[in-house]
Image (cartoon, rainbow over all chains, first blue to last red; front, top):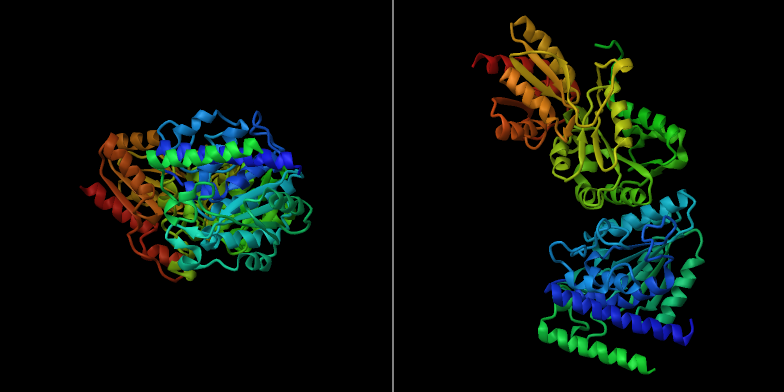
Length: 281
Length: 314
């Protein structure tokens, strides 16, 4: 990637973060913390990695993305809006009656959503079914899924991991957002999923570890994953929950809480300052 | 009544899958280490490249099937009813029901006729669980002819379907040459005016037998095969209530949440009518030969006759 490309992704990620703050503030609910930790990943996927077309969201040969950690829908909605799947202003309707932006993703309502998720552990299984089917149907598309680190506590995740390896789903890329926090506290004090890379390797994945806020590292990891053959790949991202909004960073309390008017203003001021800094680069 | 040897509807399921598989390339099958028992092994023998074992992981299997349906394939996912509807309920609810994806669940070993395996494997709650999911079609065939036609109808139907098949061999009561099946349509097998017996699964044959015995006692019993529990054929129930004035429901399922309650719910709102529900009375089954269990739990022609006699004497 050129420096210009990276700068462009960083600006887009900043806008995605603004969308998360705007939508959860308008909804007075939602999950900003994990949306912000995954904002760079969402941006990388939809602006660089995925073979998708906002004007043809159902194109049969498109790559699929399943947000297994469905509660971070505000982050996904924000990137879909920025990418042109639907108008940016829709974000303000998050969680409202009549909105296509449900509290958790609904594939039948929102353009660009490939699978309805929200109940943890199921998205990765659906992604496995998609990857298996793509191979069976001779399609060259790839399937990506994002899981939270707390989500790894769901037993179904490991059923799916076994399945992915058993059927040699090398068209599947599993991404783990290791921000270290879940609702009740840190993941290791609630129910430790560590060591994550070692567990994934034991389940037959080719694992790369990255800083989930570093586009160069993400770029290298996804390029590597593309050429893995005969086994599924995984990317374990170290991230900061609430990344980009100082008072939300590394605070479990911002898992599922919306900013009030004052917090909204502070967060938007910070993000606007970050964007201005990037524009000046 | 057709004259043919007894067949378990799980065998019908496996045979129908193999038949349909030859016609439709997009039909694939998932199983959870029970291919020999669910009879998806019959399909596997014919189309090994379209049969995917998921291992003993039913929750994952259901969501995998949802993913396959999202790609445009038509997956049939199978396990015992206890694990397909019970263990994987929430995966079925969220990944198949809420999405309204085109997944067909073929659950075998429903009810207490599972027999010797005992209560842990005798699922008498699957109709209740599956009925509670919006948009889910819930069916249970009475014999081989109907089961095979049902699998075909499920394939053609757009949206999620739950089918329950049995382990025990049951008589064939339909004539394959002149049988047609439609989802959501009940079937009058025998006309009658004093009482209507509405049954599904292996109790349909028992209901026919009971109606013949009741004839000798001067009670004219209508027999309705209600293979589709949801959506319920309301017209056929209301007509039976109007014509006969008394209803008996029979199912190899808990009296809570199944066909009996579906009929009662309809009648209480649209045409209050006396109903007696024959089913498993809010208790668990236990080990034993299927025939003996069915008799012990009153899921047999003799008990239907007794219930009808009491109901008609009032």
